[in-house]
Image 1 (cartoon, one colour):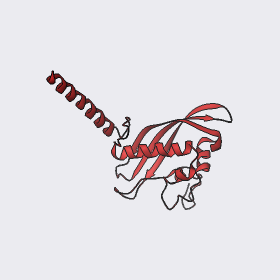
Image 2 (image 1 turned 90 degrees about the vertical axis):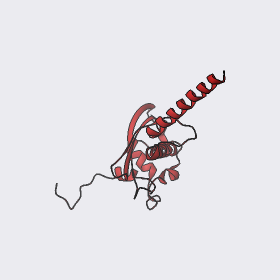
Image 3 (image 1 turned 60 degrees about the horizontal axis):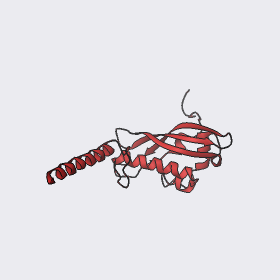
Image 4 (image 1 turned 120 degrees about the vertical axis):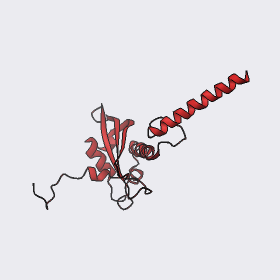
Length: 164
């Protein structure tokens, strides 16, 4: 009888270990309550989800903190959200957020996180799905990740010093 319990415990440990290994290798895509796995991809996944949660609860000061320290005070999150969704942020209800892809470049200094959002436009009473790419950068391998939401939404102006 003790032999069966040992076998059962061994199979259970292998199952849990396999699940945690898969969660880590997937970049934190599988839920692991309380256990932060996935390395850099997992960190970026959690950061993107936290950013959208701040937007969901209209905490724009906290949402600006994902940007580099030198631009945090100047980032106008409500304006940027309005540019993304073409609606004032107070008229948006972010209902669901899913991280679809976390992609790092070969240098390990740039990343993008593709998110899928289910949003209700309260003015038009319509539900829509949007995919939004969030761009991140860091100075070096040990430096923290910072978002560049404002860079991807800047006005489309031609560079005056270049020919077109």
